[in-house]
Amino acid sequence: MERKRESGGTDFLFAVLLIVLDVMVTALAFLMALGQTEYPLFSGRQDSAPDMTPLVSTMAILGIVIALSAWPLLRGRLPACGWLQILFGGALCCLTLYGAIQNGG
Image 1 (cartoon, rainbow, N blue to C red):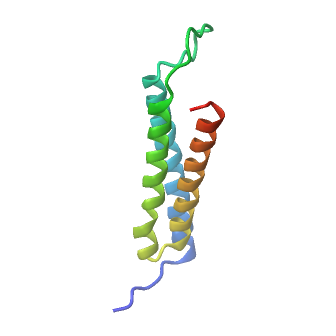
Image 2 (image 1 turned 180 degrees about the horizontal axis):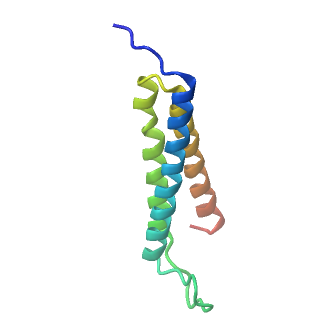
Image 3 (image 1 turned 30 degrees about the vertical axis):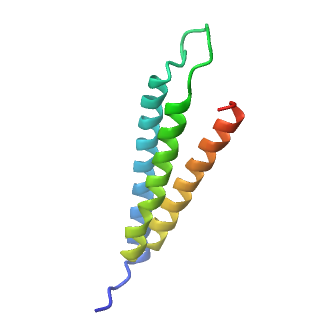
């Protein structure tokens, strides 16, 4: 039995809602991982370089999970949602790797 494709409006609405959810989860995960690094965010002094491994690994894993979450969306006939998830997850992984390389991490 052939499944019908969702209308463009429904697909667009789900895409926007998922991107908003992705941004909120990414921001929360970033702040939690930043807390694990003991980064001196508000204090002006920096005695030693903090270990950024928890931050980099958390953001990379989150980017991969977001990108892989596109598979059920593409199978469920929501192509805009699926491709935006892949784009967001890939961008998050690329930004994480870029930040790790720039900070010598």
